[in-house]
Length: 205
Ligand SMILES: C[S@@+](CC[C@H](N)C(=O)[O-])C[C@H]1O[C@@H](n2cnc3c(N)ncnc32)[C@H](O)[C@@H]1O
Image (cartoon, rainbow, N blue to C red; front, side):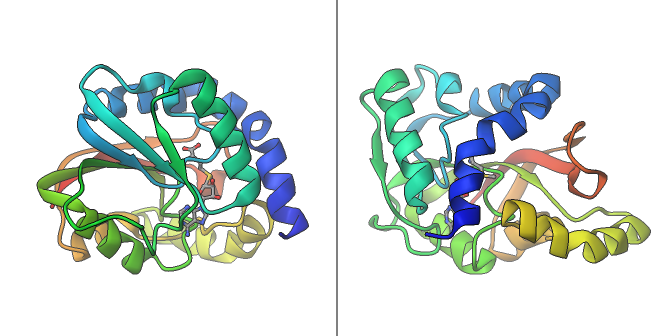
């Protein structure tokens, strides 16, 4: 376990607080209003989405590969969603049968998975035909000048928060065979400029 990952897990809620208060929490709430049926959340982190799952959710499984995050996620889930299951697994290798879920949720995860196209293939595999991916992800800017700035700053982003600030995640979602049905472009107001562009939406298999 690298020290940086341990530090990231221990400080994640504190680091995110301002962004959450100034808009990200409301975006989570809006996004998760559409979660229903058998729901899988990948990269559950410290459980920031737990308060927003509603009665349309029949069952909830959360996965998380990092042991320090996993411990926090298990504790929060026991407190806030005691019927939910928490498993250790990376998004690239999901331990579920094909078509096991109606909804998969990914918030601020596809920026940091080791292999984004493999993770999206796995998400598609475990969703039933017509199932939905709900996403909230910070992404590469559509503005080429700004995107080049993100490319230059990516080493710093990787060093501090273990993810890429310059991934074209929307194109990757489409390239994986999803059809995007709702898309909102937003920002993380208190993040460093190069991490601000945000997409929120849903896509069908
Ligand atoms: C920025 S945090 C976001 C946590 C949470 N989803 C949220 O919205 O607050 C990124 C999370 O993705 C997890 N992660 C990293 N690599 C992953 C992978 N390959 N598969 C799934 N999750 C991963 C991290 O451990 C961390 O919990």
